[in-house]
Length: 289
Image (cartoon, rainbow, N blue to C red; front, side):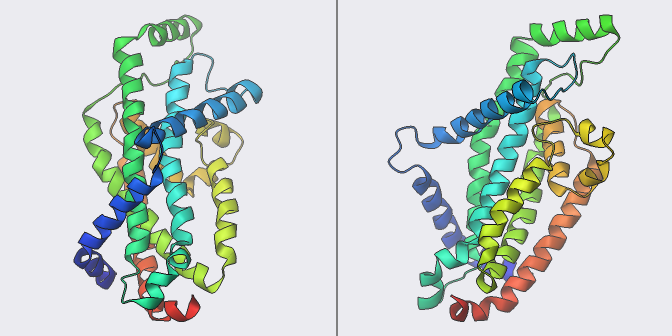
């Protein structure tokens, strides 16, 4: 692991150039440019709100206002989209850049790392929309939330946690770092395995879809617990991460430190495993491509 980290630091200029190139190439020729990073999760939000709330009738509680449900979903979609994109792209990154690995002395460990950083930067463009939505409904237009809370009080119910922004936003860099370590570590494993078994790239698409619907992004986690499947959440690291993001972004709360520590330890373990596996097999990459 130490050798890989040293190599990334040594090639930090190349890493930076690759990130810049990728960010420019995402929307080259597009009139809206980086604004698509905002539009895309919002479009997904409308689709999933329609499917899960209107068609399937998934309920977040009788007194939870639609604005809170929308922002709750949007926060999850934004984080998940960055993770899913990174895993999908890093899995095939060595194959797609085989010409670089075969013809020159190229630090291949840069490839999964720059894709992870690029996706995180792209995610950061969309997060202000979530924060702006919380600020609007919590402070600038709080009538809906207040009405829901009053109705819940009269009915003896619960309107859920109120939307709020707080000092806990300073935890965002910590969440970014934890997400990056876990994602790039998993990317090293999958990118290496994909050279041995090319079917990995195709299987990962199915795996990501199953994982997404196993994570409470479009439905409340209490539904899973009530059905007796709470153990799935206890084994799902992306639930730990997304739940931490929601505490910070939506409710002005500090993340569950035990949950975040569990994710951080797992991320370090995955990174150590992935980097070791990647570096040990790196000499075989030209022959496998």
